[in-house]
Image (cartoon, rainbow, N blue to C red; front, side):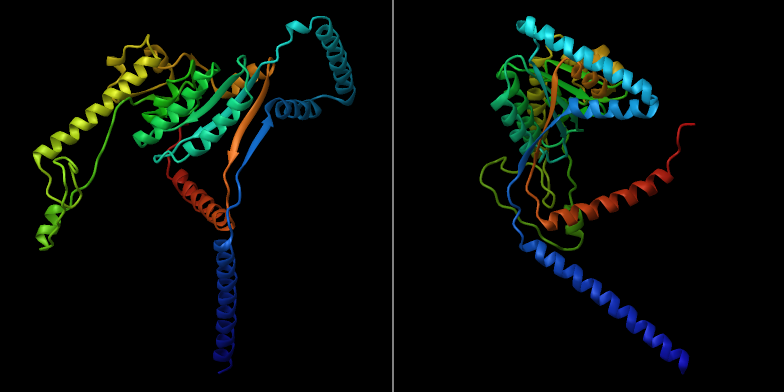
Amino acid sequence: MEFLYEYGLFLAKAATLVIAILLVVGGVIGLASKQKGGKGHLLIESVNDKLDDIAEQTRALLLTKDELKALHKEEKKKAKQAKKDEKNKPEEKDTSRLFVIDFKGSMDAHEVERLRKEVTAVLLVADKQDEVLVKLESGGGVVHGYGLAASQLQRLKDAGLKLTVSVDKVAASGGYMMACVADEILAANFAIIGSIGVIAQLPNFNKLLKRNDIEFEQHTAGEFKRTLTVFGENTDAGREKFREELEDVHHMFKDHVAAHRANMDIAKVATGEYWYGNKALELGLVDKLQTSDDYLLQQYKEKQVFTVKYEGPKNLAEKLGKAAAVGVEKGLMGLWQKSLHYFK
């Protein structure tokens, strides 16, 4: 009896704890759902300052105090001389800036809303001698979304700014539609480039519905208001029209790429294939093999470099959801990595 009493007491405590946790979580979620998102804001950060801080921290770890003191003395001397030279020859001072925009696109291209605001912010303050670097990562997605994204980059070109796109991982399909707008495309050796093609696919459950005596009705006005459907019975005429529409989009895609990459054999590359960086360079899809890190290190010695990022409004519910998603993603990634065969 004593054992049962203790066991029952333990269960009661456990149940009380679980209920308390659920009440707290429920209260937080309820409060979060009532909160308004507020306003978004623009973040401008100096890449020069960040890199200078990294360099200073590295020197502090590698050099002795005397060596570090001597280095600082030499840097002050150089800075003083540079200031003197600038005063004597002010017309030779390079005042150009490099604005860096980071774009990681998803299938639905919802990131374009942020890109629009970032491009507008740059256009409001940039001068003709300034440059924009877009660090692009996308495997493509919806045509209208990436078409708008490419148009946003075209706004920079139309304003007379030099546009450079850097691809460290992937710029395929809609991602390459964006990249080809640039004056210069940089790619890492193993970056995935290309996939100049169009794809559309959908399942059809019509036979399954018929086997279960389920009727499906769809009424349209206009011969091709719908071509292929998920539940209806598809026709050869519908399939042909659907393929015709895909071909039309593909022609638009090819014309877009050809207009921006005039020296490239569009017939050779517009097959839907993708290539890695070195082959992409050979085919004319990119202009140089270089990572965004190397390009920034090169530019920060000559220009003032700034990152431009628009942070959209977020309420507590979104923040909690994002934190939960990150936790789940990390867990799944850990399991996936354990199943991989690594290069030895």
